[in-house]
Length: 505
Image (cartoon, rainbow, N blue to C red):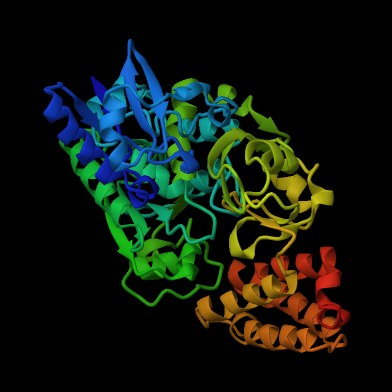
């Protein structure tokens, strides 16, 4: 009997380790031969710990399971949710990047290969650098970390740069509120990230890579570190990748957890052992990045998606999506929802369908008031905007951004003035201090919103002007995007900024 119990951080936080231990004890008491496989999560967090029992080749889902349920589960006294793939939340998805996540043992390279792993790399090592770059360009893959910049163009810039050494740097400093896709892939399918980085290295002429992971992710750090060792031992990393004669190796580096180190130049400073502050651009990291050498800096999901592009072809991947938003996006659903978790789907699904159908509306049962998309720097969208398709240009047309595709739902109890203040305060706390508009502007922003809360409506114009200065004058997206949540809250929920609100209460 094969039983799958997730080793993902979210599942472990909800008792997955204790469930696995209880199942082992109960199986021994019954004399059952049971193989406990610690897989990644399927991403349906409200069902965690989600235990899967394989019967006749079908994996049946049970969850959420507590340690005290172990005996009843083995005795067949707990009803199944049916095959995992048939659960509505899961069945609606188009899983490309996350196809193996929750299916395989994350640290079994044999399991990885049995489920299509390294097919993309095996194809890539037979291709020229030009052909590799062209494949990425044709796929339409854009950076999944926030900016949405075409991945192939960034790679080509590094490829064409002349330097004795080039680097691939994976930005795993996932710090946006309501986001966890990077962590899930690193804990649940680490070899796909390694494979994607290796293809990037071969395509760009880089022989060394670094995965920069925030210190708050100890499980991801441990899994990725071990996966790199296993891949190197299997010949998928090193001086002769899969016998191709091409070299690429990598290592895991741990960051201290500064939010601003999610910005690529701050990350590079931290990686070099310096203070994590933003660099002025130009020069671009693609020309002068890590240690002054040409460097590709890509997000985890961007790199983890590369193997499926090479395994199935650029045209297959580009066949999904909407307009210039090609492929799929792992959308992370959090906040006041019935069904929170990771939902991978092709670009184009309306925001309202994600919130009301996929996420099941609010957990409180109250009406949805606002949805923040893109982390703490993302705009608040009103239900009137719920027909907006999930796509980069479509969100830009709503003065919003997709960012890392985390969506956080709020019901009608939310006070949007308080949320606007939180955005400014967050920026003030997390600012690296390099530029005045961010360092000082955010502090003045908190003070100005406090004046509005006290009834000074004249301060609303001042807040608007301040946001304009921060947008136009900040060196990076931290100060430049903080006005998105502030101004969207003011624009869509003016009643929360009105002085009569306090009097009415």
